[in-house]
Image 1 (cartoon, rainbow, N blue to C red):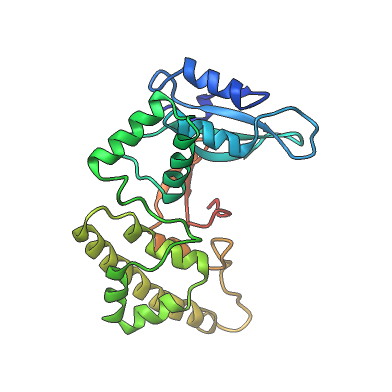
Image 2: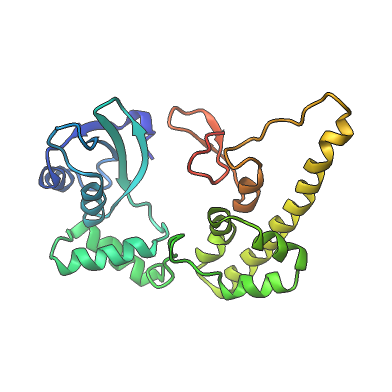
Length: 248
C-alpha cells in the first residue's frame, strides 16, 4: 500500500472531473489520492465531500482519513478498496442508490460482486446511529454482571466501539469469540477504573493523578476497542484509542 505522504494531491472542480480521473487510473494502477475539497464559504468551485465518497464507491474505492490543508481547503484521502475488506451498511445502502441511478462503474461493480460472492455483503456492519447490540454479545454480558454493568455505563460512542468487533464478525463462531473477548475487555475496565480511582490516595497528599491519555478522559476507549499501535500520516507510531479526536 502506498504511504499517505507519497500520494498525489489533486483538485477537481466537480464530481465529473473526479470520475474521469478515476476512470483513467483504475486500481491497482494507483495506490490512492488526496482530493482537495474546498471549505464551505470559500467561494471556490470544487467537488464536495459527499460527492467524493459517491464517486469513490462507483469505482470500487473508499474514503479514508481527512487532513487540514489551509484556510480554503481540506484533503480527503481515497484509496482502492483492499481485497477482503469489510463493508458497512452505510455504503451498502449508498451503492444500491448509485446502482439505481446508473452511476456504478466497472471497478465498483466488481467489488460488489466479490463481496456478494464471499459473504461480506450479507454481513455488512451497521453504523453507530443504527447499530443494536448483537445477540451473541447480549448473551455473553448476561453471564457476567460486572461486564454488563460496565457496558451499561458507557457513552454512545464507547458502547459502539465495544461491540464493533462483534458487528463485523462474519460467522457465528467469530461472533461468539469476539463477544467473549469484548466481555473480557469490559471486565478489565472495571479493574482499571478501580485502580485509577485509588491511585491519587496511594500517591499521598500533594501529588496529582496522571493526566488522561485521550480526549475521553481515560484509556477506556482504547481498552474497549482493542487499540493497537499503527502508523500515522507522517509515519510516526501512534496509538488509536478509538475516539475520532484521539491522536495518541
